Image 1 (cartoon, helix red, strand yellow):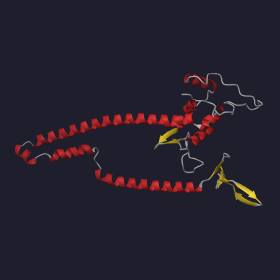
Image 2 (tube, helix red, strand yellow; image 1 turned 180 degrees about the vertical axis):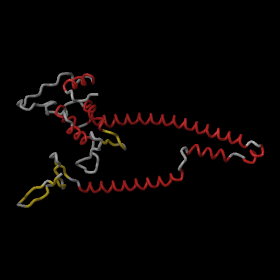
Image 3 (cartoon, one colour; image 1 turned 60 degrees about the vertical axis):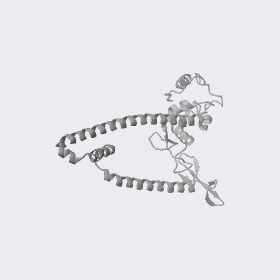
Image 4 (tube, helix red, strand yellow; image 1 turned 30 degrees about the vertical axis):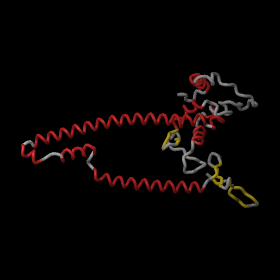
Length: 263
């Protein structure tokens, strides 16, 4: 990334846009560098890292006192059982071993029952969580694809088919959409350095890196518009029903663009 320069009266200056210096990325795209926002982001991230480290150290210090105890609830109940045993009466009756065995059995039954209840509760909670996550994903990710300005203006295929190709790159984390590139790295914003890219910017990055992007972009050879060397004549429409049911649209796109995933 290089600073964009301009020469005036023999002197060289940095070119600015909205009071921000312009930088040129390796792919030729120009981005205004927001220095105050970048400094604020770095300061925020440093503060978060410090608080996370301190919280981790505090938690580890507290856990040292409970080393060797796997089931805290079972341990608590066992202590209550032992506390309620009247040792004097047991010794007098000569039934120490019998009561010990009974106490052990009672404790084991309590632990088994607690484990079973906990497992059932955990399974129910996970199921509810997965359902809510699916609903949240469908609303935030699916809705973003259907409302995308980038798709409406620059993409030649329906939004649901573009989601079938790139939807797996998006996740919902802490209530907001985060995109990942094919290598599993988060996609960060060029406009706001240090922050993750929003949906529109991330989708444009993914499509731009797609090897067969010419097959899905408008006017790029695979979508609507003129073919190179055709003198501006409109490209013939792809065979199939692009406006019918999902199954009809899927079949039409699969026939016209075999490299595009539709499942």
